[in-house]
Length: 383
Ligand code: NZQ
Ligand code: ZN
Image 1 (cartoon, rainbow, N blue to C red):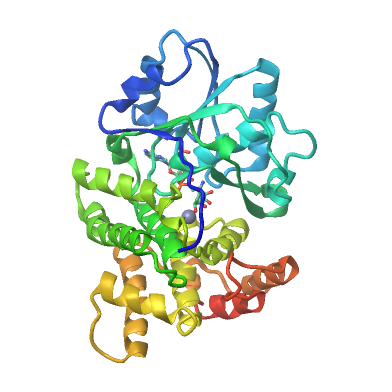
Image 2: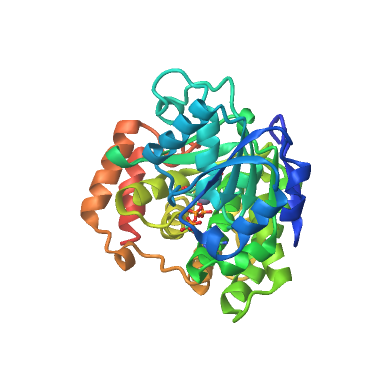
């Protein structure tokens, strides 16, 4: 196992009715800016629950944070935070709202071009405190310190992160996910699954704790995901288990001391930036291509995955690996996600543009086994 420093200070308030406890965690005399998206929280009662929990507080609102949040939109909120001297941000929404709010928190005190927080990973030395009420389980943003922001003007989607951006707390009430459209439930299952894969399906470093945690999360998603999609009405236990699995998939724990990749995410972000595809969808498209390309290099972990997660014990090593990749893709399809670029009318012209972008950038993920020249081949296999 490799050396690591693990730090995660996020208070998790998990379960039904937990929004009512917000007033224990939002500082009483703070000037609060509540941030949210396109209005789902007004329809499903979450807005009212938050407002009643925070009765008597000084709260302003900023709405309209879109999916794959735009730098341009978020900068309008930054202006409000600066001019109104806001000292606590409360994100109420999915990963986009939580990520967007982390950016607002970081950009408020930033001197210079705020896009550099992503583009140059410019250092963040001060941030506004934030908390979250999560309404979509997928990204893990509620318990990590990272985010992803899109510059609409240039179609760039880039990540940032800093320990100052951990939420002070996150409220996870599985009941608030009942109003999600099935499409977003599917996206969340796939996103969480691939977060685990980015940290697990790389190279062995003798880390049985992390590996078995990761395999437990994958098996949970495989068992609970299809149930959520098949259910006519949401089941509390099912949604609770999916929610906690998604949080655990990217709160840092399983990534400690192991080799993480994130190439699938990097390629996926380009598909979202150019075509607006949902984040989870892009990952379901890319991962089977990436694993096929790395079948030899990552063979050891792929075989472990085949045996422990898919119970594949027969056949040659190559057959086991091929079947594991096939089962992975079938799992994404079983939760309602089409996994080919052609399903979304994305063709060779886009692959050429995306591949060129990686060649200019000079890297893909965090491991050298995925080279910039591989991106075209990985995507062409997914047409
Ligand atoms: O905007 P509203 O009206 O709220 O509607 C949203 C949005 O349209 C809707 N929604 C959310 N909760 C709902 C609901 N609708 C009904 N009932 C509810 N309870 O769902 C739509 C999608 O929301 P969004 O927040 O965009 O989804 P998600 O949570 O999947 O977040 C995706 C973003 O997170 C980034 C992605 O790149 C993408 O930008 N990620 C962040 C990560 C992180 N911070 O660690 C890691 C991930 O890999 C990911 O990259
Ligand atoms: Zn993701």
